Every structure is written in structure tokens, then in C-alpha cells.
Length: 425
Image 1 (cartoon, helix red, strand yellow):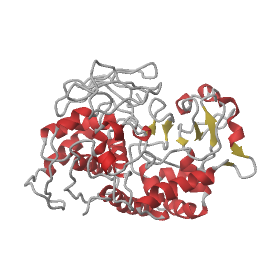
Image 2 (cartoon, rainbow, N blue to C red):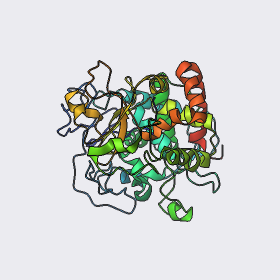
Image 3 (cartoon, one colour):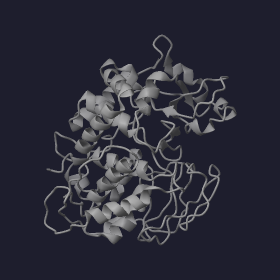
Image 4 (cartoon, one colour):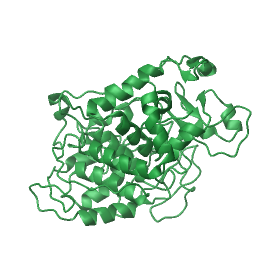
């Protein structure tokens, strides 16, 4: 049994006076193993997944994302030198509309999307970042900026790039995305005519193409919010993005995680409520059907990893988290999965300590106590598991586990739909 959920959170860094083509210096904490500089030296094979921001002195502003107050990594930084969580430096740019050879019509005559695309491609391979690629975190940024859409009110979505401002950036589900926004800031500075909204989506498209994923036609014309007033005017709220354990049986202590399981079915108690959350409260709200939901999760969660210092969850979903494949769907069905919590220290002795989530969090891992294996360390969120437990979801999961080309096509169509919701294209 095997399953999936949201795009992984990314580790963090301390950029300093970045120029286009430069990469930030990554400062690692006790989980990391090496430092890396903009000149390209050093690195730990792209596995510095637990790095932290190096705090700097700054003064938050109304436009600056705020710290959540969690005990995990948080610091104050922005490309412009002020604010915290890396978001407010972007707020100083004026929103623009634009035209593109890729589709779309708008007021300006900007025709430099090929140049932007080339610049983005040059950034993708980064040996200092997670598994050596920025593509996963750019895909997650596009996903989360788009996943706030509500069809009934026609609010939210990628149009606006609201995560530049404090309230939306502080949504717990967006933890770590200040990293992606900061990596893209030098590109925005070089090409100020492109809106942040368009840049974030184009970065994800380029990331998908660069890693063997679907090629998606880019449609320009998204317009940035000029300030944070949209949040109240449009009656935006937290809770529009998926939560990995919502409505599941409460997890009281790390020493008795097995009590969360139903011994007769092998499922987590309360999974039906979590399934309703993912299906109805999140994806049906945006206008997706069951097939599109499974395609989005199978194609999205093949990328990247979760980080205890951001989401609280830990580890990659698949063995090769920087390449498009149907590995997520296949492994979900074929592998055995064990529910663990932070208290499962037996993972450390098996060389799988990176799969221990933060205190109070639960996840599934492809390990069994006392069983030594040569399998790569992989995890699944509780919200991933519903794809295997719910019959309506599982029928599509089985198709994608057998047919990578079908997944590539269906994911491309669903991701394009996701990133254009509310844009009026």
C-alpha cells in the first residue's frame, strides 16, 4: 500500500547581494554536511536538506511575510534588505501586464519570454540545493500560488502573486517557499517587465521541461496585486491548501503511533475525513475531478522532499526526486509502508534517520523495524495514502503506475489548468 500529497517544502539559505547567474551561499546547521558558495565550490551531493536561514537584522513591514513562530528554521531576509521570511523584497516592484509569443494579450509589448526562459533554465541545476535541482521548489511555488483558487467566488489562484505579502506567505502550508521566491528575485530584477505571477508559473514550466516532465504552453498576462488589500477585499482565508493530516485521529504521543492505525484495515483512523478534505475542500472547490486530482498528485509529488524544519515531515517521496516519472504511483502500490512518528528512533539505526518527522507529525516510510534492506529512503504523507485507500482514486493510481506516458500527458493538462485558474485566459 502506498500514497501521496502536497509538494515538498524546501530547505533554506542566506542570499547576499545576488547577481543573475549567482547562487546563494548555503549555511548548513547540524543536519548538513558542507557549505557551498556562489563560485560553485563545495557541496554535499545536493543532500543539504535541513539547512537553515542565517538570521540578519531587519525590520518587518506591512508587505513582508511574517514568521510563524515555529521552533523550526525561520529568519529575516529579503532581496532588498528588509522584512522577514524572504518575501518583502519583491513587493517594491510594480505589477505589469505583458504579451507573449506563448499566448496571451496584454498592455505592454514585452517580448522577452524566451530570454526569461533561458535565464530560468540556467538556474535549475544547483548542486547546493536539496538533491541538486531548483525545479522541485519552483514547481511547489507555482502549485501553492495557484492552489488557493475558489471557483464559487472566483478568488485566489496564481493571478496576483499574493505570497509576496505577509498574510498569504504566513500560511503554514507555504513554509519554506520564501526560498523559491528569493532564488527568482535576480531574474525579476533582470526582467522587470514580467509580473511575479507570470514568472513563478513560467519557472515551474521550465523546471518540468528541464527534468523530463511535460512541456506546457505558457500563457502570459497575470497581473500582480499592488498591496495586501486583496486579502480582505476578496475574503481570502487559510485552509485552501491541503493539510496532510486534517481530520485524522489525533496523535497523542510519539511512543504510541500504532494506536493511530486500524488493525483490521491497515488504514489510519479517520482517513475518510482526510480524503473528504483533499477531494471536496481542496480540489473539487477549484473545479477538478478525481482523475485530475490523482494526476496532479502523482506528477507533483514525484518531485522534491519534505523538511522537518518547514512542514514537519521528512524525506523524499521517490528515489529520484529531480526527474519526472511514475515512480510515485508505482511505489505507492508496490511497496510496504510503516506509520512512524518522531519517536521512532529505530529509523536512525537503519540509516533512515532522515525519515523521522518532527514531533507531533506522522508519516509512512518504506522501512520495517528490524528488517535491513538496500532500498532508498522514501516516505508518504497520510494525505498521499488516501489515493490507495479510496477506490475512486485508486483506479486512476493503478493506471498511472503502469503508464508513465499517460501520467505525463494527464499531469501536464491538469497542471496547466491549475496554474491558469482565475486568470481569465
